[in-house]
Image 1 (tube, one colour):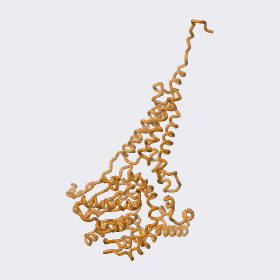
Image 2 (image 1 turned 30 degrees about the vertical axis):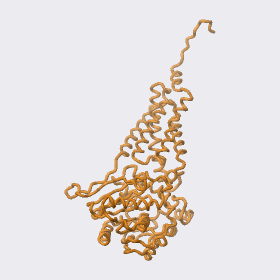
Image 3 (image 1 turned 90 degrees about the horizontal axis):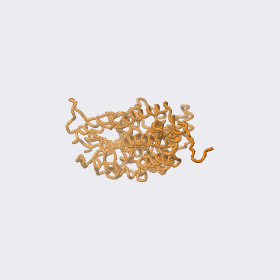
Image 4 (image 1 turned 90 degrees about the vertical axis):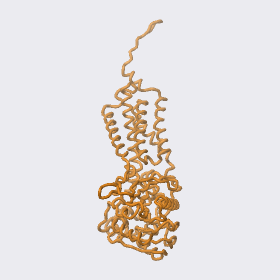
Length: 503
């Protein structure tokens, strides 16, 4: 008992002091957790589909690490390692709820569902959540060293792992930062060919920045505009596998809006329409005429590109010398129905009970969900197998060229899924046998010997009734749907004939 005027000396255990120093106030802790919430909201505002460009990826890595460091250090609490990323994720997902597409929708099963999950969620998580946790761990370790958090808030093993992860993320940043490039066209002496062109360029088409690969040995040669398949397909790598066309044409490979290197231009989806693609292709043709000083260009479309090409030349025949459709699409609905029938018959005949059951469970196309096409599309090279098929002419093999950045390769898959989901349903009612009965430009149809019945039969019927100044059907023996890539030398020779006949 103390008497008046007496004082008692109280000794407080050191560990109590340290613990108290790391506690702060409840209000402080709550305020600190606003950091990941704000970061999640800002990320959803600027990058609703996650990191898309190289700059996005590098910003995500760096800012996530900084937010994590601040969170760990200022909170001084171990549960920040869990609650911080959860707060970010919740804020991000809620803020981007209006965004649609397979890569941002709820995950589904199947091969395409896994690709959507991996490219749309898991890889973005590597660029945000992983550095966020690593940064928070390092920040908490620093807080413990300075007395802001309790000693041992992060053990030595945890800090070492976080440091190692940070080094790994830095290495990833180096890989991501590698720019795209295309090789110069060189002569026998190894020097650049005078008057040649080899460039990756960006142009604004339809109000959206889109990418072109332009290559040619002589800029005074005719211009050839190539439209890739899909929708959402990218063929820069496929076009680079053989340079024969570049000898006789200035070859322009268009990364269409929402595809590959132009994936960032996907949104808004309300303008992602067939009509807009026709307008974009028309605008691009006019741009090429002005740039290279030509009156007309040659148009080549493969698969979906042949659909788009026919609609474009129907609208503006004055822009084109001729149109070449490879793997010509005529009626998407008829093709899908026949392909489904052939796939079911093959699965039954060859004992693939699981595939047959899945196809029957889905029913005959069309489907509301584009991922329902996965069993049909993914098995095409099984039920329509042919000798000499070269898978390196398709994704992912064609992505291994320097024209793509690391993010472009991710976007090749994202673009294929998200573009198809938005555009494919719009093609259900397109049937050239009814809608495109006449073309005002010379037309050449190129089909592979091993093309599917679902494509060859509608194409043959359409071709028979098509009125055009000149029309020619060519079959490439031994080739499939991508005949121009299965036999690039023969296709280049055909295009030389087209050039000589129609100029």
